[in-house]
Image (cartoon, rainbow, N blue to C red; front, top):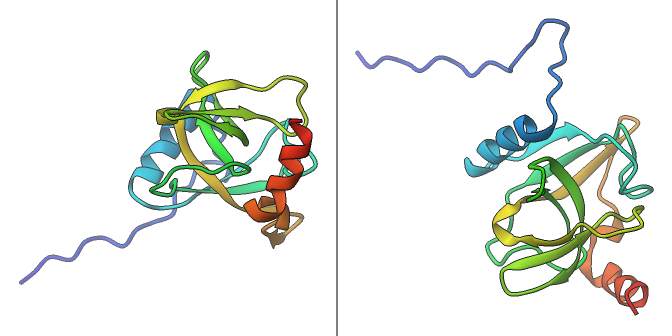
Length: 149
């Protein structure tokens, strides 16, 4: 007789909420994406406003095989402090990306490609799902080019 695997059970925590941040959240995200699954979490902060607002729920998917593209919003671990950051690709080099927040005075700088964990595929705000047209490269690229010139 073949034994059956137990049914997967959603993670639960006393109080219903598990709060992770910094390197712990980045490690969990990395492990989930390595299995080919998407990962959802609540964004904190205002560095990507108005595209992503404080409290929005973002879905991160594994990066495409050819890497992130100009205009993609990516999740990465910052090489200086190891924290998880979600910002936009505004430039691309051979093995690194120039990344910055939409609502920050300074860019994050050149981030090694190995630090990019995944990219944003969905944003949920006030119980509604949407994928912004701004996230599409063909629409956003001309805006970025004007911003950087």
